[in-house]
Amino acid sequence: FILKMKESPLTLDELIAIGAENRNGHGKANAIIGSSIAAVSLISSSTLVWMIKRSRSSFTTTYNRILLGMAISDILFSLALANFNFTAPRDDSYFVWNASGNQVTCSVQGFTF
Image: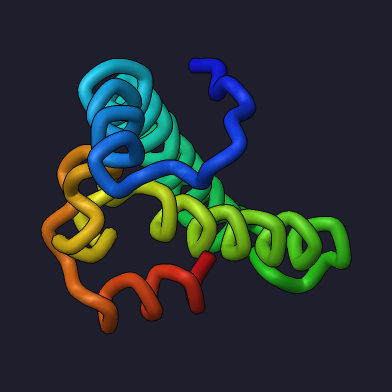
């Protein structure tokens, strides 16, 4: 969407209308696709950790330790993304699809992200 420059700032009604367009269109698709990809990444990284743990050399080699660190960081990042926007504050539901959280859930997600 393109905002036209105007001399006065946007009113609340104009901002809500712009947010509704994003929330029901691309915002919903972005949330679903991003969260689905994050879930796949979470499963893949967890499988990688399990495979390293069960391997003969386990965590003794430098290569496996680096791979383990990368997998754990990916798991944490994927957990922050795989929430389908439900941690966004309910007050922002006019702009964010599936917003049903509060300020605390938003802050926790911001900390993990």
